[in-house]
Length: 292
Image: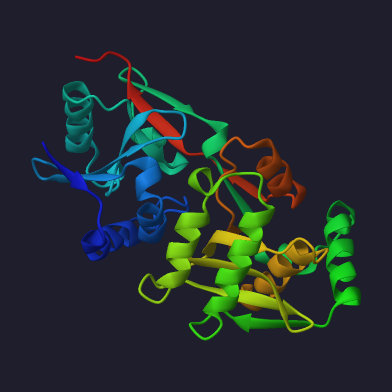
């Protein structure tokens, strides 16, 4: 088995394979893999005629990420999965979407998931307007922002990139986490090469002062995934306004936004649940019941 670290040179081949899968999970896009390549220790594996990605989960499990669907040719694929897990020190295949689970018979494989890995998906139409009693607090926050400031929303571009980078520093200065253990570095790298990675987003100004931005990409024809959302929390209501306004802009094109996982962090989980997710996308792990 040949292995090597994931690099920028892998972008085209990995992107083509992931796009062909059309999966709604946030790992199935190259920028997300690349920006977090150090955290997850991503590596390319070439094993016989199979190309896979190896990684390390947040809870310390070594996994193999498939780059083609097992449902396309299930029998040969399962034999290869069985052999690969038997002959390697990887713990599981991950992330597996729910629609692939039927390909793994339960007499051979053990299927599980970690709630901390799950993606939060929201209807863009709902997020654009915050309708109903359950979204009343978010609508109030958005309205407070509108009453306090004159907002301007711009597409995130190289021309206003520096404003976003300065906001990232403001966000970091207010964070309780050191740069080494949060996503400051990946976010900065994404901003600095957003054109090369095909990323897009918006930046919000409050009374002409940069207040918040978000950056992401099209995950599939119906879903936009938000990789990063940062703001100056001194502007009360900025996040509620930022998400709502962005969804208003994209709701005709995308049905969902994917806000990715909460990593098991209580504060992040509480925040994402406060927007009332419309779907929780589980990411399954497939292990061998017996190894060897």
